[in-house]
Length: 88
Ligand SMILES: [Zn+2]
Image 1 (cartoon, rainbow, N blue to C red):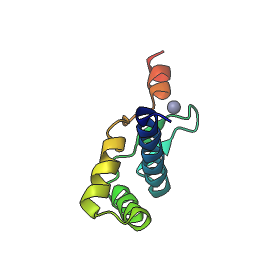
Image 2: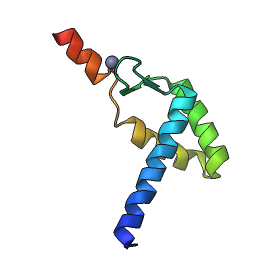
Image 3: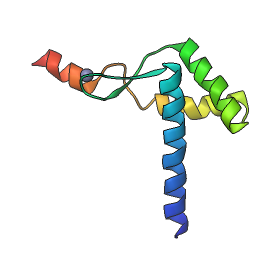
């Protein structure tokens, strides 16, 4: 296995880990109509996800929070499918 492929897999695993923590805590929600993930803008839920991430990874609060925030920042507040329907 090449080094770059291995790195890519690690990034995907890292993302999957972060998304699952954010979903479990309610910081991310999945649109029931379209399946898109949206940022719930819930700082208490993010704190819960960080606490769970610290328990599962053993990393510091600052490190886990940065990892989760990076993933959360990729998602918008509104489902792209719902925004499109509203525009039609
Ligand atoms: Zn939607």
